[in-house]
Length: 412
Image (tube, rainbow, N blue to C red):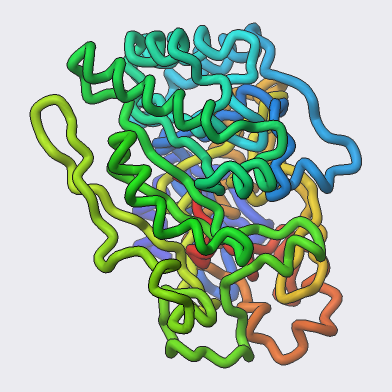
């Protein structure tokens, strides 16, 4: 106890859940273990949802399963309030615009991007590409946007239209080519172009076309992710393996089931690399595949990267997975996720929310991954806990079977 008192200064440990120390720690005692949660400005990345609206109706989107689809956008007064609060975090470098709406659908999207860039943040965002016209592309270049990730799940018109309802493949590719052309004309490397591809059984034959498209549009990165299935019908499209299934390719494979039996025309070259030529150098592009099997190694990129998610209405969540309430299907069973909101910047400062004892404890549990592995449990299919995001260890919310932590579902 003497050594502990030196660490804590004059603060005393109490038998209640926690006490705020003079030295800016929240202290917990758990089975004789003393845990110090440091209060500070360690936030390094923000995932900001400017808009919950979208101009497409993609079959892969959880918006199709929401009983009440949010249809709002971040009020500019609220955004200005957030922008002011971000100054409290000296290590904050990156702001990624995304969430479950189309960032460019915000009525003042370019103004938001301009203000973030002017404040010195590295701005990146996801887009379905339909609204990124030549005029918008010129502005993105002028504003110094770091990277734009185009979501494209079909590389022929039929598949694209089937998945990205209300979208046109030619328009999206044309917008990508315009952005590249304007970059070349203005002799700049930014914004970098990235591609995102949600891999399913119905579009797996499109994979070999990705490196070719990436080379044409000058994209050094192609991020392939698995499908997070929001309905029983969409679960039939899932490719990743779950415990108990035979692995024809062996444990640890990064190829989906039956991959070896696919015709050669359906497979991409190995290694899948290509040149992405910039104005004065060449980037060697690569295809990044997701993990295709369930395993014990778990890590949350949101928590590990000291990131937070802010919804269009100001609500703060720890990750995309807990940003909203929604159903999804895992191992052919329905799971109902409840949102985990740790505060709202309308009511508290982001600094206070980030250092809320509840948020500090949550990050500690996730970094140490103090959750059971529900998918490996013999009672998983009959356990009530697996129907929601809680577990038998008393965690609520629980990250026990989070697909993001497995690397099966991924984001930029």
